[in-house]
Image 1 (cartoon, rainbow, N blue to C red):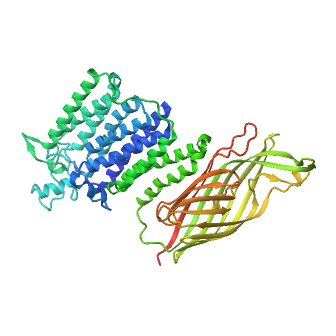
Image 2: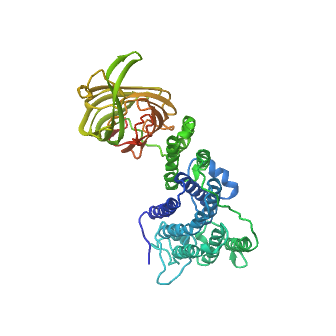
Image 3: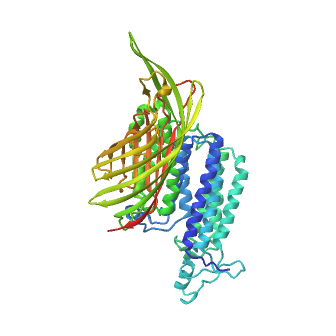
Length: 594
């Protein structure tokens, strides 16, 4: 059997991502069933992924070269070790367990899903041709083509000619390893309840893993290993180390289970304290920044797809719990740090784009409330009113076209947006409902300089704004509640690449949002261009806060997201306003570099 696959490294990346996805899905499912705080679970997953990648790299680098590997600006040391990833990943698990107080079920869970995940990765090793086996002539043996480690090392050792299209047939040792790892995971899963102590299942899994690695090395070609091939008494030094680790782990397990009464790792209540999460997020960010040169793009991906949701969930908890209100501003500013670090891991867009056209598609949905005062009456204590209260539920879509030009360190944008959607109004006293179609056309023009940004435009059509109104009308039915024209403008001050503040009246197209028209924010482009930002702001007419993010996914596709937190300013019986989501996608074309 021959393995000849175009771009085998792509398949290695695929299985690598599948392994971490498997862990992610299983842990999230089990955590939801046990009622763990999801933000803490995501931070735990981030820690384990981070330490696993760091360990898999550092374990293959001589200790004296660790500082050079960390300080280099490019990925020079690109070997990986499953042993290093496993051991460092366990360190990450223990750290997060102690910080967040996960109990024994989480430790037992990792004891069996860890081997399963490593088994999935080994399928990637099989197609990639790394850590291959000794020459073997069985019917299930495999051949590797030119360009693989097996073919190159066999040619270098004189076992095949340079003109040979395939390597000698070898043991599919990676497949053996996958099957053995799946078996270890199954055995640990079936036996973990037999142990009396926390972490015993982890120790048992490690014992089986080290024994497996000791045995499998008899079938692996030493030239395919990144570790020393020096022999002592007929065994490679790496095999002696695996045997030593197995004996040590087995002895420790026996003593821990039968000779001690003390728990090494105690199970505590899952920590609900939000300040722990924020301190932990900053620590992870610093570690990620320090070791960023060790990560490939897909390894960064497996960390960030857990870390970013953890940050956003922590922010959501911060803004949804009124007891934490006084900590919001400072904590939000501190949480810009991870996004700045994230920005440093995004490859630069080359060549630099000077002009392009873009099409935006956006949507927004949610609900808001109105309090309308009418029928004013003068009295001894001043003016009194009658009141009516309304709940508005909306679904809006928008489409926009614009042209963007970079010139003299300024970004010029002009275009037009169209939007429309349904607005359902409910009188909260009578429960009377009425639906209507609202729409708008929005021509606009913006200039964003390095320090100053200005913009203006108009919204024309049948429009609605959410605000508490006082109408000098005797009957609310005679009052005009629609708007046909709304001016919009915006101004920003500060070095937008790093930190700026803005005030925005309107400018929400094409993601039409009928409740938002007056807001200000502070944010950063995270050291990148105007296509990236993370902002925290205040919506003055709603008396609530929001977070927003913008990113360029490729040189053609971008995304904008905004989440508006729950509005606590309106209090009418059992009405409870929800958070609101605004999003848009944009497609860029007609790029010019001059």
